[in-house]
Length: 143
View 1 (cartoon, one colour):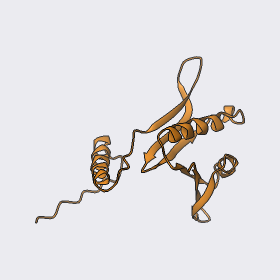
View 2 (view 1 turned 180 degrees about the horizontal axis):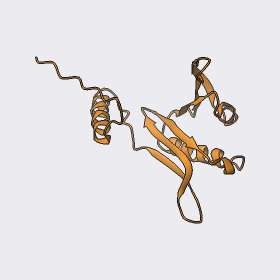
View 3 (view 1 turned 90 degrees about the vertical axis):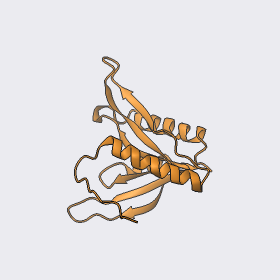
View 4 (view 1 turned 135 degrees about the vertical axis):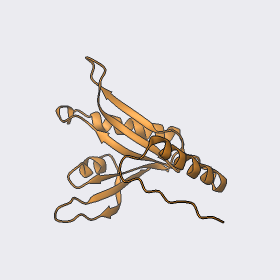
């Protein structure tokens, strides 16, 4: 057997390369498990004046869980319950999909307390250094 070539992309990889790797992984997962990842989830905040996206949540179906990859609420809109509503909508979709729960990570300078107030519990930690922030991994189980 001739070994395949290894090509490293140190920069912005192409979307089609991402999609190809994901398709190969999903194909292998389907052969080994009944769990199949579904499409990503987006819950958007739009400016009512022009419809422009000003924040929101992006999550990925993650092998029986939903992983919240991004959550952003504009600074001027914080404290109005929008983050809580975005998370509630993502959780609702996860429940509808029959997922075990939702997980995410947050950096020390971000919103660990916010997630804990929503019932998320820490399950892991990557320590930072004196110049970099650490991050905490949190989850909320539904079943």
